[in-house]
Length: 403
Image (cartoon, rainbow, N blue to C red; front, side, top):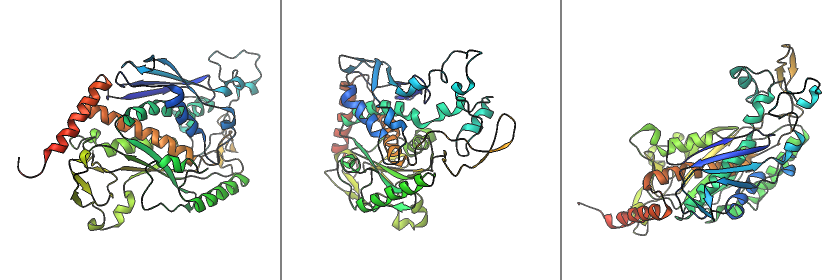
């Protein structure tokens, strides 16, 4: 088991989502209303979200692992109630249905949607009703991920690590990125309905979302997560599964509807010559978390050889358009009789890229917290901080030249 691990459970319209987070050291100050609930609220925002967000008002409830405002070092169990459960108590009941139950109350779905887990899920798990698949495959599950990640963000924040994100594009509308990002990236991006840093492009993004909604279609896009304050040395080059860039890519790709991940220049780097890609090394005595070294550029996105460089870690995710189409319903097959039919519809978003960026932050936070505890160890925050400060002191004293 990795130093920090998590599991989630629950269905989109089930009674609740649950999360189990392991590996957080004892002694981390933690309050739901201050540290976790604001992140859940951020996940629910963004222009283009569906009516489900008007129903839910996510709050996390601690079941175990925290006492008197501090973590205990034991597994942390959290719960996020689904308010919409009240409307789904028959369809999502764990009990066998009454023989006389109205079939419509069970909300069965037999027309799998292209681009969703519907068809592959019913084939893999030998089901007939796609409700058995889509409820768990839904991105509603990410609320539990964000709850776990909020604890990891708090842990990393104790050591000066800051995580933010913004939207680079929605559909074919691309935003201009500033030459230098603000220190508090989320303070600026959260102020935009589409979480972009380019106000003019943001207006065009919202117009594109409105057009897609009118036409019964959906839009995807690209978001970028930026992490500052990390020391050099997280991750490793020695084994494939310890390489931090691979771990980050897998974590972000695991988010529903994400079909591409880039770190640093990403695919753009493949189109350039090496002299235009790699980051020159310079001395910088102020870079105490990087051994007195710095880079005059950051094409690597803060990771070289699977290891953090001390520069900002930059990860992008490409989100495909949501698969539920309200008007342009794609061809499908009725699982009951094999007849050709249009794919089913389900209450959904038109565009969820701004929310996906927040979930991207969450997966990056979970991955980096794991790598942080892996590097510095410690059953308590006191021990973790002592190990971290000792490492930074070593980097500061290491110097250059022969030893």
